[in-house]
Image 1 (tube, helix red, strand yellow):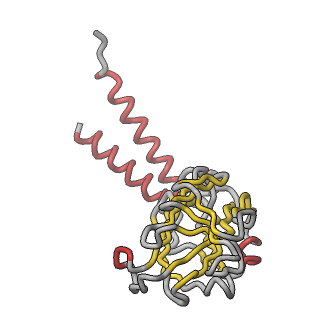
Image 2 (cartoon, rainbow, N blue to C red):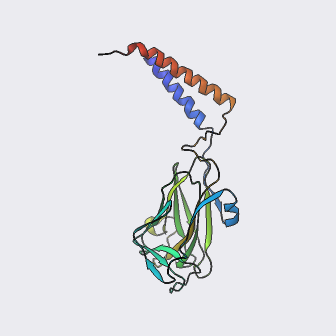
Image 3 (cartoon, rainbow, N blue to C red):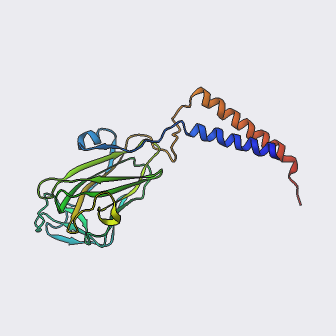
Length: 239
């Protein structure tokens, strides 16, 4: 039994080493130019709020836009004719002290982008956290003021990693990065979801070709597992 356990542990170590041949990026690739971002793959969905009223539109606490669902307390579309006078309609949280969140309900999107702006508290930081099937990433972003322009942020993670959602909030929420004034309000639009190519259910894509040494280790591991199964078969009993 001890030999069998050692063989099984050895095979698990081999498989772990094979999976580690695909390194995990420290952070997603960040783009500030929309054209460069879109050139990296295919955009499947774009969500904006230009079709809403140019005044204020109060929505629900949760709204689905294709594969993207946004959450607020409740959500509100701030139009171009409001006192904030943004250059485009923006979606925001009606309670600026709460998180504006998003969930992505279709797996495989490894491209995510949005345009962000400060409706109030110009020049202040917005804390953005991105969630993937592998980990999460935190950013302190400094978008422009909404009456002037919208700041573009695009993120791409490697094939095999894909986005699950994100949160946006003022940075005095939970003391993330540098505190910002309590009167800060921000909004976003042009949420884009896309793919750069084949995206797999795990970090190792089926199209990835292992190194010869990796093949040898995998074959050895499968051989060891077969030996374990053969050794255990006589132990099986029927009632």
